[in-house]
Image (cartoon, rainbow, N blue to C red; front, side, top):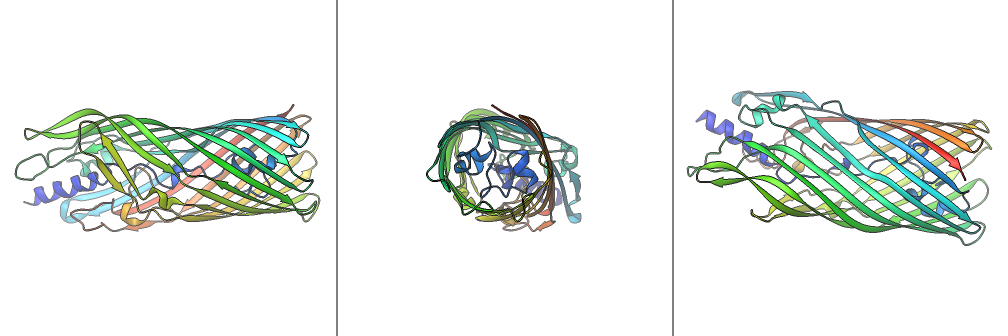
Length: 420
């Protein structure tokens, strides 16, 4: 009886991942090395090509330029879970991986009008866990536990300088999303209700969506500017194939089936202020709101199986960002930043494949120009706190993954720019 209860507990914990997709790793926190070095406090400043993303109104008045950057994101997660009565004692960490992102952005100025085009990655993260450390969740067998998500945005932009002080801008966002998931899976296949041994589940999908970003920027004087950005929510229909468990004649059977899942990128609103108290120093402050509650639930519509539903119950979140830039010389800048990044995922829906934590983030950056060329580098460290999660709704039928979750993230970025 004890073995049956233990296996039932393990399988039900695994089933909590059945249709899980995204957490606060969905959106990259800082896009572009200059913004990253300043803690992402860039809505009120927006004075390089990444204004296409942060605030397209900031493109107005910029010189024609071409920018290329690379960013590497490294999640550093740990997970601990122990149920001595059932012989479960898990203490594991994510495999060391760097998830590459980046962008290529161009700006072309025509007096009061400025055109931009960006191809960049606004979202992308994942996690890979050693299957042997999680064997207690899959009947003692080691399986792949891995998630990867990447979103590429193609964003043509336009900005217009209405007056010497006021500018407006808009970016059209064409999103191409990719998502892969591997994990154990099992179902109640026997007539007596006991579960069979889990098998390897995997899925791959891609999707296309469309949205827009609208920005405003007002230079109160030569020292002070304010900005506001509104990014629409975007529904992306993900299409792909999955190897999914199907109970068949008392045996576990994997069925390859097409599926469709709609995922909504959240509405985003940012407001910021940039202030130059001296000729060499710039200070910036942003508040950025993400309406994560639009991701209340995700439904996968399988061609050969019943639909799968996963309730997220995410909370809306506001990031507070602070940043500074000091010009050591007219060609050389150093940057520092900090931001607070609250986790949208509640304990009731948390799992390890898409970890979610509340982070305190420190950033640093450096920039130097060589005539018409420029190089920028930056790094950030997201320090997350422990999340001691209890089984929900109860230990024998959890919808989450109970245990102690911890996530830190290290990211670095290198960029090159050229005036045209």
